[in-house]
Length: 132
Image (cartoon, rainbow, N blue to C red; front, side, top):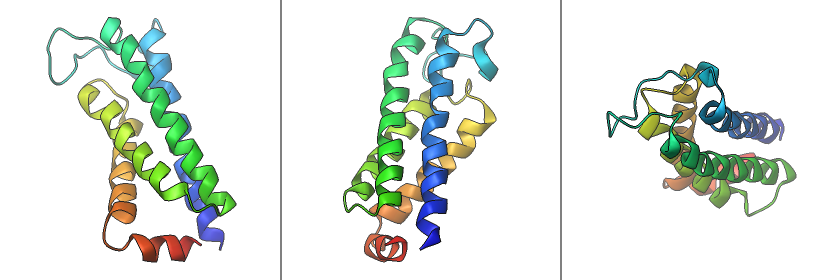
């Protein structure tokens, strides 16, 4: 039973960590993000207009992951789809800026993959039952 709280807190902290992506787009010093361009385009920097607009994706990841984590800890049946959606949006937020993000965001991407494997794979029911 305590597993759901441990995993819930990890997912919640990961979700809240996406606020760093929002802050970095507007911070003068980049808050740990570096000035390398986005992986798909050499001229697009995170501190520019596209990076600032991208904060909507980071905020969506915050909302979805936090809601999924809270649902898990409260034992609600609706938490897995929110956690899966949050992990997918989190990857969408991180991957295009892979050259720019802090190392913690790259570790968070591994957590996103783990969430997707656990909750979108054939063993979803067993994982949900275990965390019950």
